[in-house]
Length: 216
Image (cartoon, rainbow, N blue to C red; front, side):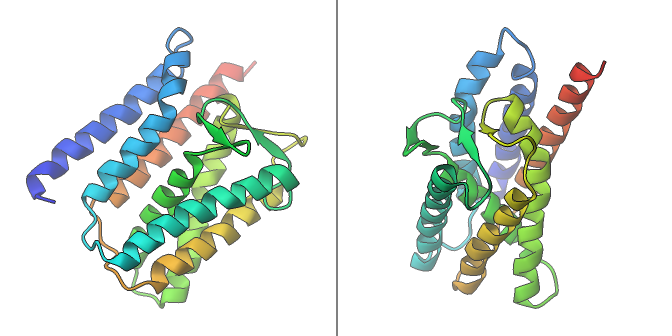
C-alpha cells in the first residue's frame, strides 16, 4: 500500500473512533451510533488489511481460521457458559447466528492480528511473543468489558464479570496467536499499532465517561 495513503487511512480511523466516542455518549445520537458499531468493526478490519504486506495462502488460512474459531468459541460460550462464564449478547453488535453476532469473528481476527504484529517486533523467542500478545488481548478486554455492558454489546448473567472470562480470553487468544506465529507469512503492518491504540483510547475514555456519569 503506497505511503501516501497511510495518513488518510489513519485520519479516517481516528475520526471514526472519535465520532463513535462522542455519538455513543449523546442520548439523541446513541441509537444511530450503536447501529453503526458492526460496520465500524468491519471497516476497521478492511482498512487494516489494506496495509498487510504478504497475501500468501497461509495468511488467508489464518484469517479464515481466526474468524471461525473466534465465532465458534463464542457460540460454545453463550450456550454452555464453559469458556468465559454465563453471558448473552445484546443488540448492538448486529445480526446473530446461534445467538452470537456474526461480526464477533471479525473482531477476534482484527484484535489478534494487531496484537500479533505488535509483539512480533519484540526481540524474544516466538513462544514469548505468543504469550505476551495474548496478555495484550486480555489487557484490552479489561477496558472493553465495562463499556460492553453499558452499550449492550453483551451482558453478564452473573453478579460480576468472572475471572474465567479473562482466563478464557487469554487461552483463546493464545490458540489463535499460536496459529498466527506458526504460519509462514510476514507479520508487518504499519497500521496495526495505531489501530490498537485507538481501541485502547476509545474504551478507556468511554470507561471514564461512564465512571463520572454514574458517580454520586
